[in-house]
Length: 394
Image (cartoon, rainbow, N blue to C red):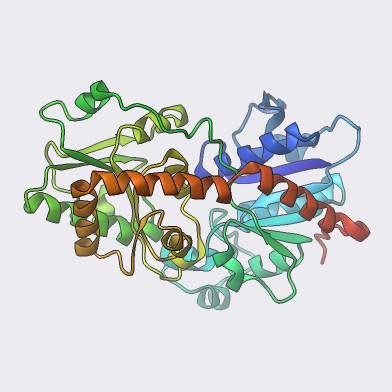
């Protein structure tokens, strides 16, 4: 099959790494695969990567996507129904011909819309003037549902998104296919810990990897407050944070400043496994609210694959982790509960190591490419049955 994946953002966001796993795996199985992303490559170029090719949105729409067999795309798999990918799909199908459309869902986009705009989708739809462009980084308040309904199929990063599916919609769960050679346990590097904490190395070190955005603001604030509690109680613990941070997002409440908190900012992807080999546990805050109930935090499968002990809420994959005894799963990720769980892991290293082993075995079963890729291939063929194609005019 000729497959085009369309990322709503640039080629180094969290979604890009999921897409790359599928693109690399499908290419290895004989399919011709191209990944389109914002600024993925210079105009007019299609550089190769791991058996597939990259292309910018601009080039894909202006010049098309050439395939080795001389035919057009069979599958256009767009990542989320945000306005940027909705417009891409419409223009691509109009200019370059019919294609089977598959839409990937990885969040409750309506909950994200509300947290970003302060309005519900219904309120925005009533107030919105259709003659004005809408933000391309969010769903269109009127058109996103009909766009998904017009697709030949939908994939969901986790089964927790099923309540968001339209009645009768063809869909499958499509979790990330993890590269277990890249995300593999290994020895710690004491010199790296000393670089992060040059005065004195903490007895225990936790991490949170993720960018700040309004949808997750309160979750990260609770994490910071939990570490304030731990430091106030005298526990010798450090917090290592990666990702873009927005300090004005927390109403002045950060983790305590000083030598027990370190921000690395945005780090190169290749450095991430080394970071995870040098921490004692990870924390993924988030309660079972409309945002967290319908998502799979991108970092969680990576923590599990690395065998990193994890503290998480019961939302989304949390119940599965609890059943597998592969993480500390909290009913509510309040600062006090997060602090108690962090202290328990610090005081019980043997039990934490056993839990980490169960986490890695869980990840192998849940995120192995050997199961996920054949399922995706079969779904694509089902979407292509009967010659069904996306009709932008509908």
